Image 1 (tube, one colour):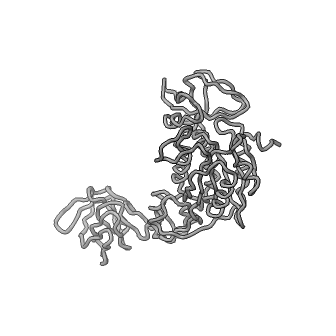
Image 2: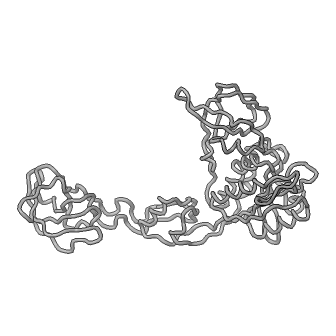
Image 3: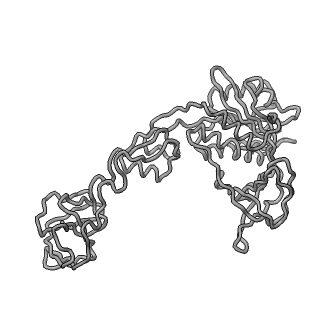
Length: 414
């Protein structure tokens, strides 16, 4: 059994997801117009057939073809029209037809529509149907062609996209059961951090991690509780964690999880709840803590991410994101790696998973990938210049130019 400071990437991911198995999620009903991006909380069935009536598939003329020999030319008298939203209300006799528009109701006594381009106009108000131009049943969308009543529309856990909303609108559903939005508290730790908008003092840096994490969370659809910067003080950190646990479903911190003299997150976690693990065999992002904070009768997950911005973002993408998706009511997402040819030599130590930042290009009809320069975990530009993450597994050593590597497109992780 690996100790909590020697977990592999896979072991850490599995332990995080295993801790979520008993999570009970709260639900609510919202209007369809407000449901974009939300997670469906129930399977939804169609309350009706779609379409609810036989309708014309194109502009033309509707008539009863079953009583006619359509292999021969026919003449029909036009006795009315059916428009979309304004059906023909009369009755048709033998030898009669109506003009009809796309989507309009086909009268019960009609079984065929000839498209307007195929019909020939004779003396008003009649049309002539040339021999063999149409068959019985042509150009009619039958009741329930799109959906039958009680057909499964969408499964619980579906993140609602515009096309999903259109589907629900097509059957008249407006009160949509969704999981309540996840609330996530975020703060950075460290006396060296300076809020954006204030002048930098000697030895301090601007707090970029919190901005990155807030952006990632908002992109996922979470409600973010921004708690700012917490000083390097165990008392202040304990107070912040207790406050966050009372108002959030999960807590994400950055910084303070390594072995430095002023890194207090790990010891305060142990005091307030428990630590599941605090280190992963990976680069960047080795010092990452996961556990729970107890405050009153609430138990809240805590992800203690590294202090360097690239390490914080990589840790979020490969550990935190899937855990939050489960808490939101949907399933973890495991994008498939793509094989690319390394355009350069890559230095790599065995015994840890490494996530290098790269950009792809095609050469000789093959996908190639190059590093985005210096791969230091504090160099944010290595991410802004990247369109993929190169994943080098533990057993992998140095990579030579021309050798295959596995990559994840950044868009598949965001």
